[in-house]
Amino acid sequence: MARILIAGCGYAGSALGHILAGEGHEVWGLCRRPERLPASIRPLGADLTDPATLRSLPSDLEAVFYTTGPDGRGEEAYRAAYVTGLSNLIEALRSQGQQPRRLIFTSSTSVYPQSNGEWVDEDSPVSPEPFGRGLLLAGEHLCREGSFPGVVLRLAGIYGPGRARLIESVRRGEAACPEGPPRYTNRIHRDDCAGALRHLMALERPGGLYIGADHEPADRREVIRWLAGELGAPLPRTGPQEAGRRRAAGSKRCSNARLLASGYRFRHPTYREGYAAIIEERRD
Image (cartoon, rainbow, N blue to C red; front, side):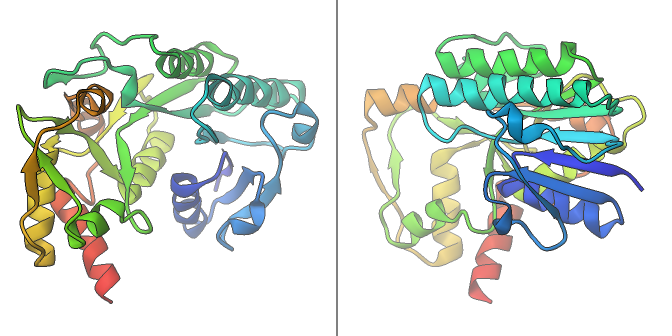
């Protein structure tokens, strides 16, 4: 069994750690509030932006996951999460003489600037602007070109248990279907996020970059109307969408073909299976 560190152990990282611990691995979750971690994960209170708190990492780590996210929307928050924190962790591992066989970094499909419904894959053009994209790409570079063998997983929007804002907005009749061309959204259920990360750890020779998204990029209107049907809610209203909101949302279709080719099989292949599971769980 492996000795594993999950740095920035939050929503997806906790799910991953619970799976790995259940398989018999020794798993440590590094975060500022370790008391929130599941009992199956060994708590490690530390701040990735403070090197002094990283001086006593567990020894002989075989795999390290970096799954943190920014604690704000400003440039400094993104830099702290994706560049400073990762640099500090890599330096701490190196100074302690550790040689993990794999470092896995969770990035985001937001690095793709495409906004007209284009299909994108791991080889599609990315953009360093605005700053969020650039700092994510800097973190990817640190992971893949650093001291340890690195793998990057670019995640679509993560949803799952405890993240039911869209479901509730549809139930209350507040969700609207914007007019105009399709605005494609991409998502991955938390359980498949954790499953894909575990899969990449177990692969003998993984590639350096994968997209983590389910099988079916979907027009937001399609998702809202499907949810309304499942919930027995009124059909959502249709109206114009503000230009600023449209630009912020973007519209692209992310391909998971490389992840599928590596052997991963989704528990929730589309939003239908994923949201249906959440709805059923909430009914119970």
